[in-house]
Every structure is written in structure tokens, then in C-alpha cells.
Amino acid sequence: MSRPFRFGVNLMVAAPAEEWSAKCRRAEELGYDVIQVPDHLGMVAPFPALVAAARVTERPRLGTFVLNAGLWNPALLAREAATTDALTGGRLELGLGTGYVREEHDRAGLPFGSPRERVDHLRRTVEELERLLGDPGHLPRPVQRPGVPLLIGANGDRMLELTARHADVAAFTGGRTLQRTGRLAPITAEELDERVARYRELAADRPEPAELNLLIQMVVVTEDREAAVRPFLEHVPHLTPGQVLDLPIFLTGTVERIAAQLRAQRERYGFTYLTVLEPYMEAFAPVMRALRED
Image 1 (cartoon, rainbow, N blue to C red):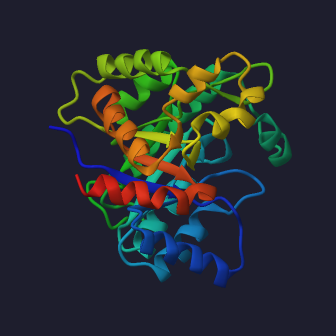
Image 2 (image 1 turned 30 degrees about the horizontal axis):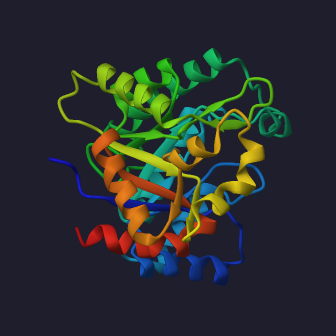
């Protein structure tokens, strides 16, 4: 039996208190289940932004999507997470990733490391967080027990293994990091099939299945799908127009067509937790309503 859909919006644009509060209230009004923030220099600081969101909302959970583990010391991160969980009344979902932007590490004066080193650091961070936040004597104490739910964003084999072992939510970006540029490039629908299958193989022994999340990169409600993706073709020269239209992370078409696409992707991949980026918060709302009517 498939899980019901759950929806998150990743708020990325910094704003004064009044504007930030209005955005968060609007996300709740539209029906989003989770208000999320990323972890990039030049964007909002994750934990204070989530505490501020909690003060003006009641229902949505609050998530980091995702923290760049390389910017964090595990003990200090445990303090931040526990404090935020307490101040939000137990609404925190802690999302973690390795980080992929070298420039941010350089600006912060922190080592970037190789892909292997970044995964190793994330593994140590996850294990230490589980130890600290699972300890009844840890101060400050998180509200949620046995601990704050953990989301890990992954694509490579070692990351999928870590996710299968530790994460309550397995988050798929639908992309891979290009080593030459450090940018994310989308993978095809067929490549995503293989990645999800690999995750399921690694997670076969879990007592409880994880929730599967997909980060949606674009939402355009339109009658002309081809015109909607045309501006993006130059950014994905390795894909044909047909492959771009088939990308699970690009949603184009009428509300009914997009809803049908997401139902099909739930059957194909198991994605029931969908995150959209802030610029598409309003455009995606009618799709959410259509899916909740199922």
C-alpha cells in the first residue's frame, strides 16, 4: 500500500521578518506539509529561519533541506538541532547532505575534500548525531523521541548505503554532481529507476521502509509543454527534448497532467514526499489539491 502524498516547499530567499513570516503563513495556507530551508551561503541561515517559521504557523513541520555537513561540527549541530526541535514544539525534520559547492567551503575557510572524504564526514556526523540526540542525558534535549527524524539526500552508491542504514527519509535529487564544474546535472528517468532500485536493494533489511522524497526543480502549468522546457535545453545538452519532458524533476503541463505524472511516479519509483522550490510554491498548489482528492 503506497503512502499518502506529503508536500514540502524549500524557501530560499532571505527576507525581513514581516516578509518571511508572510511567506511561511502562505505556505501553510496553501497546504504544504513541510516548510524547508536549504544550507547555502547567501541564503537564509537554516535554524533561526525555521524557528521564525514555527512562530507564525501551526501545522507544517519544519525541515533543513539539506544541511551541508561539511560546514558543521557534529557536536555543535546536535546542539542546534535539539534547540530548534524544542523551540518548534517537536516539528523539526533534520535533512543532511555532503555539500557539493566548493566555493562555499572556500568562502567559509573550510576544507572541501574529495567525494569520499565528504561522504566519510557525513557518516561520522550522522553516527554522532544519533548518539548524542538519542542520549536522554544530552542537553539541550530534543522534544521528539527516540530522536529527530533524519532525511539524507543521496545519489551515489556510498550515499545510498548510508541512507538505507540511517535515514527516515531517503531524498533523491534526480541529479548527479559534475566533477569538472561542481554543478548538478539531471539524470534520466531510466537512470533514476536504477538509483532507486539500488537503494531498495541496500535497504532490503530495514524493519520499516523509509519515506522516499524527490526534489522537483521546475513546475510550469501550461498547455504547451514543449515551449515550457525549451529555455532549459541549453543547460542539459546531453538530453533530447523528449528526455527533458520525461524528467521526473521537471513538471510541465496542465494541472491534471502533472497530477497524473506524479501518481505514475509514485507507482514507478515510490516517491510520496515531494519538495518544490520557492519560485514554484504557488504554481504547485493546485496540483497538491488535485492529489489530495485521490
